[in-house]
Length: 95
Image (tube, rainbow, N blue to C red; front, side, top):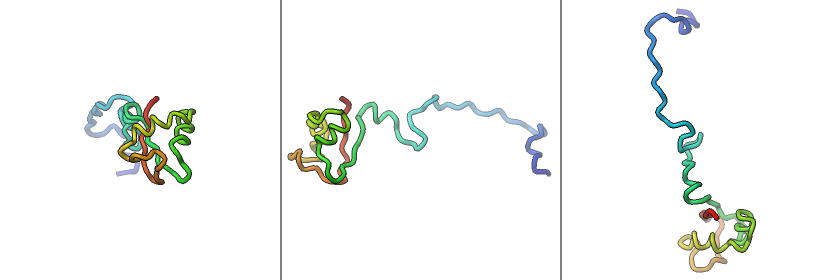
């Protein structure tokens, strides 16, 4: 048997099963659920020097929208919106 024998039309051929996954699917190449962004917003991991107003300014273009981020993350942040910690993962809601 030679290296290119698989190219010949000898033997039984089987039809290829159709792809039942819809084009586009709901996950990207890495398996990340693409629908999560559209329904719950994006996530952001707090880094040193961040504040809710800085995050709002960078994400929404308006620092005064920090209330939206705080309201969506009260259980993570706690009762003081000025006290966020490095490494916290915050949900950034859609506008």
